[in-house]
Length: 455
Ligand SMILES: Cc1ncc(COP(=O)(O)O)c(C=O)c1O
Image (tube, rainbow, N blue to C red):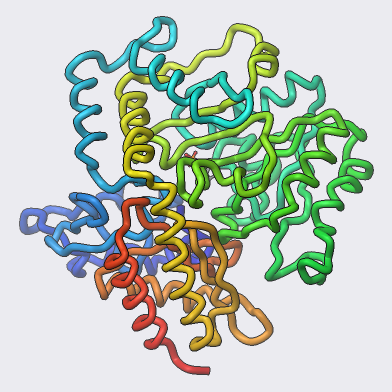
């Protein structure tokens, strides 16, 4: 997804394709390019990266090609979604085979692709999280989780995090904790926003570890002062992705889960970005030594086929009584893609690769931090690494982040950005990335940072 800076540029027209500009079109002479049609026919809120939008026409492994035939090393994977590489042959084969066999059933009928996926997930998820509701997006996965927490506890209020992101439905907008994503305000009541575990910009102006994770302990006061004293649960991203890859301290989730459970609620871990080996373990929450009551997934789970999944225990799932239905949830083709993706992750031990390559990436970013004062913070886990760009006194520098995106693109490398101010570079290549590709990425980043004016 774009960020505030991209959206602002786009609203000002600076990211819109210019007539005749080299947006890399191969369209017939005189015919509008894909980028021009995008601008002409899609809602203006659907913004794109880059001053001249990039049109992608093909992908293979870590590479994508634009419509002028130029190749790029993709280190963002369509927002952490292409997890095992573009058009992975085993995933493609599973999709094609299923598309030639049976494309749609709805959940009014069982289908083997869905049942096999559910069985495989039950073997991988932690604790007793062996019941699944399938949908089409992370938004729906989070929406289902919140509904489940509310129904299973009989309480409406849910704790969410500042800087969080849950998607674009009315519920998800209300749950999100970043003004640029809350243009309809809080259309669904019942959410209270706790402090983010944002160590680089500690809301309490403390320093970890001497802070004793005071932001987590504050959730108790949030519940006592901003709710009825009982809550349905807490919905939290394991790493706050759109918020700028904010990594909570290692004690954080044990503390908040225990506070919330004491207040009658459940712990919902949003693993939409951190799930499926991204952080060097199968699930991000494994780094924190606590098993959630509900987990949500989407993005990388099916390597780019649309999917959402809410996982919970038998007992919690049983509280959501019939009827509840999703026409496309559990679609056979998507389910086949998800199962094939899981098998690739397991067979190629991609959690290990994410950890090893993530360490290499993180070391290179930290080395750059020592050389470029604009890099205020480097943070992340596995192949989910962020660099926060700042001016003096930690003033966010979104213009520099936009410039780095342009410069890395010029060097044939795609990365992302995010954060409340759009000043955090987000680097998250597919889990199949090699040492040589990490080095290519970091060389392009290093050169691009070198292009920025020295302050
Ligand atoms: C952590 C998190 N949760 C939920 C969502 C919503 O997912 P979707 O865009 O698939 O609806 C996103 C999307 O970026 C996300 O990053």
